[in-house]
Amino acid sequence: MASESSTVISNTENLMKYMNLDQRGHIQAEYVWVDATGNCRCKTRTLSKPVKTVDELPEWNFDGSSTGQAPGDNSDVYLRPVAIFPDPFRQGDNILVLCETWDSDGTPNKFNYRHEANRLMEIHAKEEFWFGLEQEYTLLGTDGWPYGWPKGGFPGAQGPYYCGVGTGKVYCRDIVEAHFRACLYANIKISGINAEVMPSQWEYQVGPCQGIEMGDHLWMSRFLLHRVAEEFGVRISFEPKPIKGEWNGAGLHTNVSTVSTRGDGGMKVIEAYMKKLETRHNEHIAVYGEGNEERLTGRHETGSIDKFSYGVADRGGSIRIPRQVAKDGKGYFEDRRPASNADPYQITGIIVETLCGGL
Image (cartoon, rainbow, N blue to C red; front, side, top):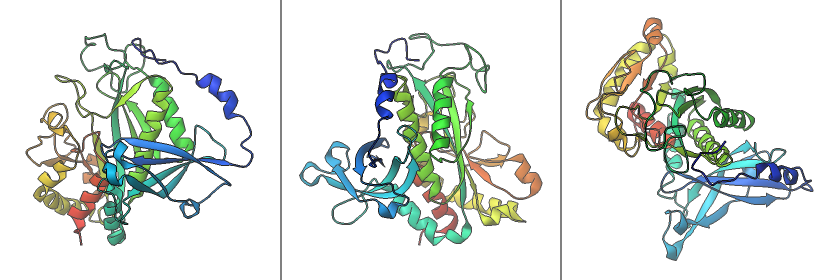
């Protein structure tokens, strides 16, 4: 399935006869990293044998001047493997390798947000942070218009699309299903999918994950989504307000708990956390995604970007405490402020820092 306006032709069917060729004992390792603008980049190298841990993988490098991560006169940026996932495209012993980016002087690249987040989580490991992220996104034709929408026009008003079933209510389910299965194959902790409020918008959930694993799994799931959509000639947008006006935006709702909130008396801990989050509202907004001001308007199930608020079962607040959590007196809370294009390392990192201190 490709957009009506698309000239993209997928030759995946022809490719498959080559993918079945014997690799003669060699392994393909797809190194994946995050660039300066929050997009995934990748390149592949051949390994002489299967590997099981990141310690067996060599460092690599790339031209950082072509990704916005280094100047042209000192362009080498190094890739340090941090996580391995089975490759759902090449299968077999082939792997996807998530990497951090490091400069030649031995310091983390300025766009390597994972390093600091991991440092904070290791310091506060005893808190046992669990995260669950809800990634919303929009599927676009190659013309940049939401897939299935009338060209230059609009479908019917929001209402029948959320968790919808049937032609005219949902679009691109084939891509969504392919992505779901690819994530399962790759051992991504994907926990569910659903069609969203705006037509051609979907959501998938990743988690619960402990600590830095959250960002690792979310970033690799984004890579897989782009990679799957590539074969269908459809574009993926993580823009927080892809269509202006009376249409829901796209967020990255972040569910958070600690060993204290999950235990008896956890609700009191959550309420204490709310005070800490309120004092650093502006600092959080600063790293919660580009263009978020167009989404956090106080309408369309969002709170105002200028004011911190929270409440039980309140989808119009900055933070929602699920009703069941209030009833049980323990559990988790949902930060509804992050935009769909926010970096999960920055989100989880600042939450740990705000609730427990930076050190």
